[in-house]
Length: 343
Image 1 (spheres, helix red, strand yellow):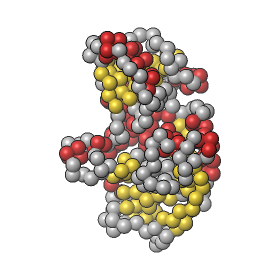
Image 2 (cartoon, helix red, strand yellow; image 1 turned 90 degrees about the vertical axis):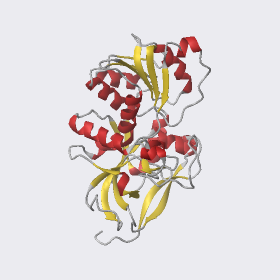
Image 3 (cartoon, one colour; image 1 turned 180 degrees about the vertical axis):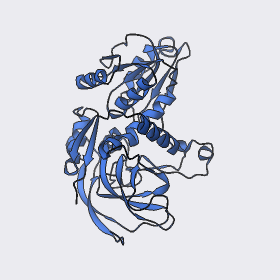
Image 4 (cartoon, one colour; image 1 turned 30 degrees about the vertical axis):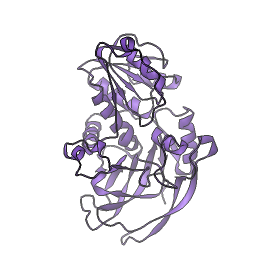
């Protein structure tokens, strides 16, 4: 594609949000047009499947427009650039992550908290994402990828890894402290490894037996049921499961002065908290909102220097709806990844 012209391609779109059993994802035909301004066109190689995609498909996260193409953990090649784009030349392998754009001028952007920009936009929610053969992205929000990471390994890092990195920072884990992780999917299994690399003791609480086995295989110090008490008080905890009634469970497991970081974009309702049992003794609850480009750069640099075990389950692009259904049913260990066949 030396001279880029409009191209038709296959994609999966959320036609009517609803339970995954109703097949809210449907195959569609889309057209990618020549990029303008800071845009780049990316030919997709792989796209990891995130629980946020499931929330979008099922309507927990209301679509921003009709027929949205999900997917924000995208690895692909730049095939064309707009007139103001030049940092990522055609042929460059890039990652396209959740954060798609910000205003750059509000007080949040100016102080380095662009994840809180009220005008922020997101890949696979505001703009069409990577459940497709091509996508268009803003070059300023795409990331060149380290050569040592293969496509299937790199894809989950672009959300699961980056969000886990931010959630761990928000959890205020002290040096060589004790971390509890609730839920153990794509993001959690990467975050646990980052914490272990830093010398933490890590305890995992999750309902999935296969996930508990993976946690122990990765070196976590214990793995138990989602509502079980960890074997020792926690300095910090991260809630990855989108289950609000685990908030009191996690808070009760914290030691004095501990912090609970809630990593998801969607959470079911949190039940009433008992002040003395859950919050007294200076326990802290923090949410995690998206990520900044600085988060992405820092985590990708870490991953390049500290090889992580990225547990993946590959699916053909044609089976994207099955991948989402398997994620909903907890049949995926680690991260599901859509792999595009060579054209």
